Length: 376
Image 1 (cartoon, rainbow, N blue to C red):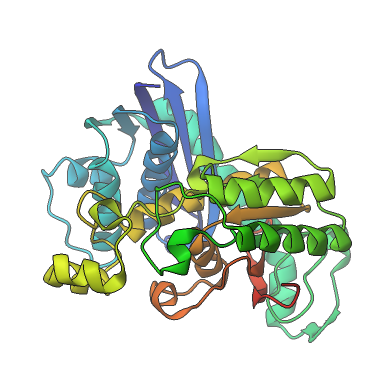
Image 2: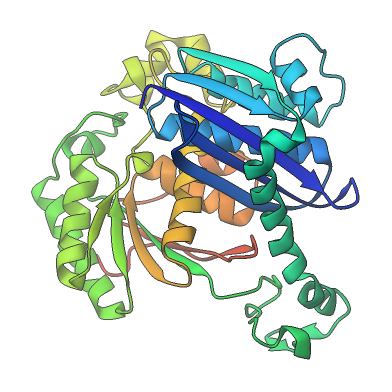
């Protein structure tokens, strides 16, 4: 898909208030819908929601492999700022604009056009649906805040008795999509602790044994609807063992691919630091920096966010095994915890380890398990 049209919108009921965004990606004919994105994002401003909608639309376009993007929005502010004609003055807008520009840099050409609100009805509808999703849970959230929810005991108002609140203290509503995050088994590069991104080494004999043991553990758990995997061989082999043991479908998702380490692929930490000392040092503390010829952790986050949204939509309230690599798994945990990028540098994940993250339909999330290897 070479050329696409993105229409995006965002809004808040109160400014700031409960907010959501919507984005739709059309084919070049402006008729066929290729992707939709919407999300309730809590309490924030219209402008933040509009930028979030733009970012979601650009990320979806990148997932589709588009090279030329026409962005149409009814936000004069976003269009003029992204076109470089207006200066960004508000501090909360700067990181969002930088995130959008990082995505723009990945395409051959991106143009921004202002359109009247009436011409942006599809994205506006998605944004309002996202805000409606937030409103549906407001009564229950108010009950939580008022103290009607204590520990695992939940008092659900009669008007919301069809909606279940999660156990614990999160107040998340509905049945979550539970992601069982399984790192692939051992390869020759992992033995030597070398950067292993888009390279495609197979599992070692020990790696195949790790995959089999993980598969048996997952089969014993049961109640798993599907297995999804990175397309790289080490992950796919691990996923195939799990899918066979569970007797469930296997779906390959490009968004679960490991970080592209570019010219550092196959090097050890020390070798990469010696080759590019300043860049490597900066990269270790700044998720927006790209390895030479590679991709940044911010770019990884964008595609992993898309995968997370798709999985919640495809498998509502179900358990799904996600077989991937260190960075995508850490990123999913980061999204579930709602924490900053320092988690990427401080969390250790063993080969063939299991983590569990849950994502609720109202936008809530929780982490239940990290780096379990008891079955190996």
